[in-house]
Amino acid sequence: MIHSMTAFSKNEEKYTWGNVTWEICSLNQRYLDIHIDLPKYLYGLSWVIRKNIKDSLIRGRVECVLHIQINKNCDSNTETVSVNKPLVNNLVLYAKWIKTLTNEGEINPIDILSWPGVITYEKNNLDNMKNNVHSELLICFKKTLDNLIQDRKREGVFLKNKIIERLHLMYSEVNKIRQYIPNVLECKRKQLLEYMKDVCVYTDPARLEQELLMIAQKIDISEEVDRLTIHIKEMHRILDENGAVGRRLDFVIQELHREANTLTSKSINSYITQLAISLKIFIEQIREQTQNIE
Image 1: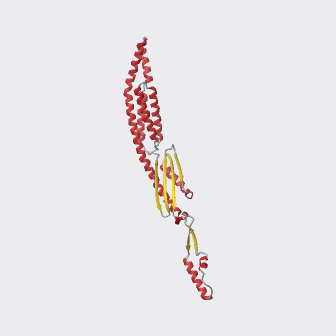
Image 2 (image 1 turned 90 degrees about the vertical axis):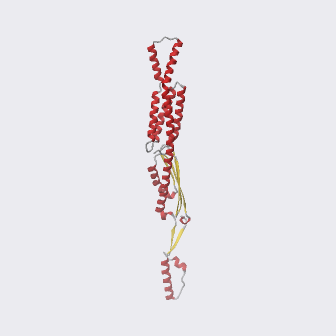
Image 3 (image 1 turned 135 degrees about the horizontal axis):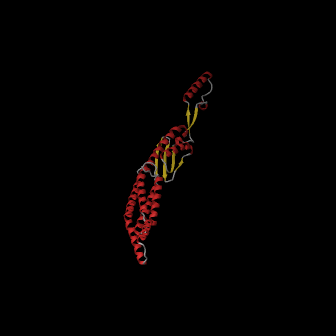
């Protein structure tokens, strides 16, 4: 399955402690380049996120951003006051008992509340539910990453179809060139014979045929046409494989471009030159598409 390197995924989730939005953007790159943007208090998740991305993707620049909004009741600047009611009840009972014995004093609520252990203060921060928050954040991240991978697959199918269309057009142009090669060679042979007659130069027929054969070998493009056909078939074979094939496609495209350039330089016929130029255009279009393939 061909995967594209360009995709975008966004996932939003609401939890009891706040709202979360993960965004993952993937762009074309020669190697895997990961950038993670997290709040400072969640830096501990970076290595887990990086490992998940490395296990799932092979090439591309991946930018991962977390937007998080904590509910007010979980604000790290607030505190919850807790009263130990059983202790307060016991203190009041003992205070009343002491009053009946001494018949003096009043029960002061402030004194009761000031007794050690009656009131406790607890910060409402994410540290108190760290494990739960991290688990929910990672689940949300994995959903976002899975969506990104699906987008890369869909885009990969589109790119593959576009490349195959260009390869079919290239194959058609190569066949036209192959069929026209005998005409070009025969035309060149006649031109040389006519030139010899015009200049009235006597030449041994055997020697003349030998010279014509050498010239025909220099201008013959059959080898380039054969190699173009082989490279086109190799492109089809690679596109049918699984995994990361982008670098291999890049290499074959370089070979296609080299053969097309040689074909253009050796061409002595305007028709073949036009076909060779069309080939170079198709190759360049394929190159643009493969730059986005993983």
